[in-house]
Image (tube, rainbow, N blue to C red; front, side):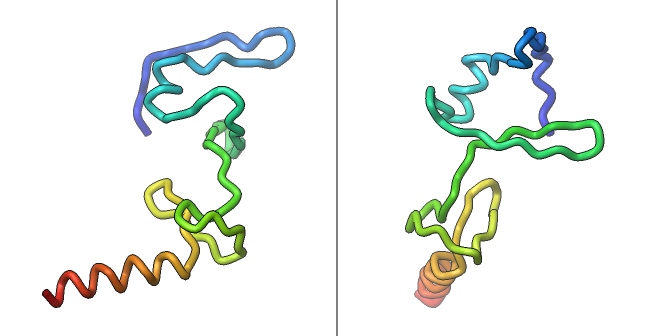
Length: 88
């Protein structure tokens, strides 16, 4: 986890503003949905994605690879492409 040194107050409604520079770095835009994960005394916020990053299908076999959500079918396609490149 990267330390940013940025702090923000929680307002009376429980809101926290995510700094513009962080939103830009993460490619988060207005109206994007985020989801919250809690572990011990920490909260992680991630951009919400309900489906595969490639085919956009919502499936139960989704896997996260370096922050990218992929279904097994698309993972198989990437694997085949890499195997084909390695053969050439």
